[in-house]
Image (cartoon, rainbow, N blue to C red):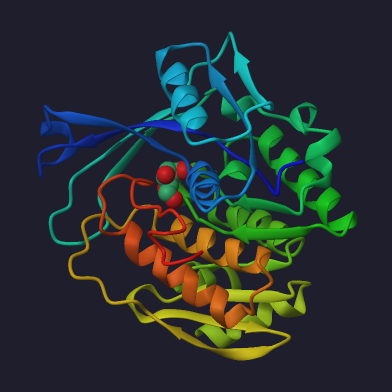
Length: 309
Ligand code: KDG
């Protein structure tokens, strides 16, 4: 039985080696991407058994991802190989000043976008302690949205912990209204909701972190952590509220993946029974490490790199 189950799209990532607009870059470095995959990898590096549910095309990008996921020790029993549809990929620019890089997706019609309710694992996966979801998979297609909502409702109904990162990707949604509606529907099925401050404002209409936390607590969340970037995170739950201060970083190399690193820190700490304040602090520590690496998941630490037993 895995400790954690997550579902999402794994993508090949081509990272620019030159600080130019993507259309002018001639050299790329190959890596991997996918918000839930990053979380899966991070939790696996911290010693957890993670079941990753996904679909890959039967192509070289899919084989490369499978090798990577195997090397990271993920449980891949429920990664389906799709004969008909390709593995998605994305390009990422090199940002030299710590700003968010330019990202371009090639994922429409991908194998993972064809995931559906029929891919929901039964058996051991239904007994995992925790299900982690983001707002990306439900954006991929109607069948993916149905799958994510069904998995969340099942896990919640069975009393398993559900963690949720809205991870808003407006360009994957037909309209902003559809995005807000589905993401908030998923959030209301989660025990722990972890929006960024900007995302939280857009999703709730509230102007500050405390208001965002109140919004989700009133809709069924037990704990809310709002990411404040370099300022750290605001947390609210039954044990109280407060700010876990940000961890200073010498140089921000690439911001992408910081939120996933944050989720890794929070989830691992909650699995260890730590209070939310310490979980948010660990989230900050992992996020701060991830922004110092170019890849989306290269900076995810092992236990000893994080100073843990
Ligand atoms: O959170 C990091 C992700 O943005 C990245 O790895 C790719 O899943 C991804 C997406 O859809 O943006």
